[in-house]
Image (cartoon, rainbow, N blue to C red; front, side, top):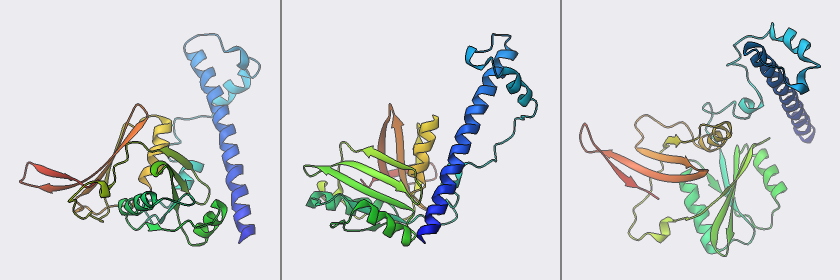
Amino acid sequence: MLRREARLRREYLYRKVREEAQRAAQEKKEKVRRALEENRLIPTELRREALALQGSLEFDDAGGEGVTNHVDDEYRWAGVEDPKVMITTSRDPSSRLKMFAKELKLVFPGAQRMNRGRHEVGALVRACKANGVTDLLVVHEHRGTPVGLIVSHLPFGPTAYFTLCNVLMRHDIPDLGTVSEAKPHLIIHGFSSRLGKRVSDILRYLFPVPKDDSHRVITFANQDDYISFRHHVYRKTNHRNVELTECT
């Protein structure tokens, strides 16, 4: 098992390095192509290899939309199999952080929560891999207030760290009803850049594919690199209007 994981890791890193080299070469060719089309001087750093780059441009085409890379390979089973999410906390969590982890479990359908205990991160990751977990979430706190969320996609990443601010938990709101555990529809807004698409993939693949009749909606709205999270259930009042109820 360990040999297989090591081999898969080496293959993944090798494929990633090759793709980085190919992307760098493609960027050089694009600079040469634009300079020739616009009748401008070729950039100084590319003049020595300009002839070779120009020759290779003849074999390029405008296709390639369906070509997979290591980013696609990370989520190759997305939508085919439901994600298996594991949620845990930092060491010695406060009662409020434990409460937040329980509420976070309600956000992701089918998620499981694990007590951290004295386990190290490496041991947690190995246990998750052995049990087919696709994503590991670790929440952190500062003086009882949740301040950080680590999302790690297994087995090879990506891993992202999100700073949490203005956290409002369900326990802080009196007379709040039960939360729907249906598979939610997702609204992802404002993730138009290359990095934004990467972050949106990390977030949306934590959720399974919803059913058409699901009335649960989760929103991630990005504005100035601040991601707002909203959780609603909607109900049709008539054929033209709907009523939103925030679940928190």
